[in-house]
Image 1 (spheres, rainbow, N blue to C red):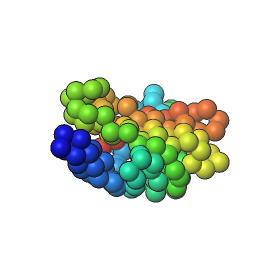
Image 2 (spheres, rainbow, N blue to C red; image 1 turned 120 degrees about the horizontal axis):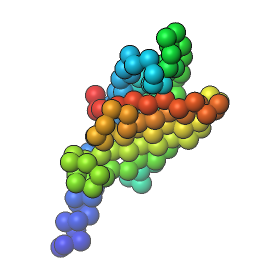
Image 3 (cartoon, helix red, strand yellow; image 1 turned 60 degrees about the vertical axis):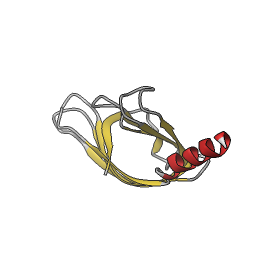
Image 4 (tube, helix red, strand yellow; image 1 turned 30 degrees about the vertical axis):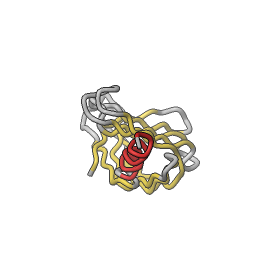
Length: 134
């Protein structure tokens, strides 16, 4: 009976994030590389994720060069219980090699701080952002 209850709770927790809409917003700070993002992340029972995302990066500096990417790829999602690393539940999705230019993306939803999510390009340039459920 106890294992059935634990199994049911695990099933409900995973299905709560079977797919989610996420949004990351950039800031207008001139000294920080930032990105904005909008899209969907689909997660199966094992935590394998498929992302369909639209991303805009903004390089630091007065000219603030912007680039846009459409990202589709597979990765992994893990849900961290409330009180583990933050007061609220945290959903961490990580993707590697989304296309030839974007080699890494980490989306941390529910993590405190303005720059808890990151994106890295093939040339090593890293961008930061704050992501929330949409």
